[in-house]
Image (cartoon, rainbow, N blue to C red; front, side, top):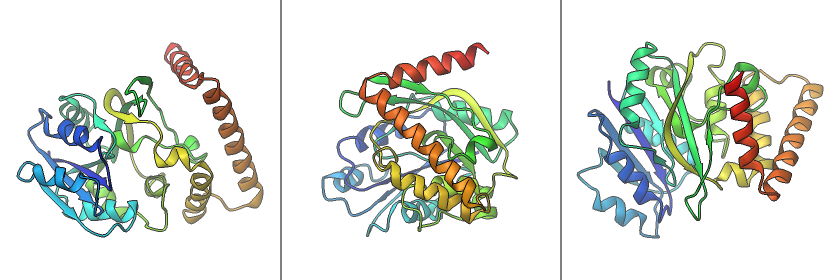
Length: 266
């Protein structure tokens, strides 16, 4: 089974170096690694060129946005499963892909298989908490999603449901996953796959994320009344306000840890 890892990047220094090294150090023997660069001018392109011969494929060109770059990467890929690994994230350890491949075989090739992520501080690299998320259809219809930096998507899903929609600038992965919600088989395995830095685009543009989630739900026929939309917007407002209060007081990571321990004890 071939696993394709795709990293899209524009001006990814200094973290892109760790991202690339974490992929090239994997012990799993059949990894295809593709890097899609958006005409970086901060040294990223020169770094990518220095790995020429160790990367399976790489391209650099005009930046058409995240969704279009995702699609470019997929069109270059040949793997049975696809992982999109952000340019400021990294695989957590050298056996990450090997462990995932074993789980994919164990669960008989699901449409999606995802693991856990360690969220780390962007400046200090200090561990904030481990995100171990169990997603249900009900949760997805409330805007929650399994973490794409640790989600492996079966190639057939792309063939059946299409590529990423470039109209979505942030929540393109949510809309993509939402398309097959009634048909796809989704498996969560509690193994650590990636280290994810905080402060990504989806966390700093929360209002836009909400707008795109609502647009994705409408596009796929899951939000067909103004009352349901108002309820959902209020739900997002409560969540955002609660998180802001906890983050400002430095308690958000502690809250997540307590919640995960509570779930594990049930």
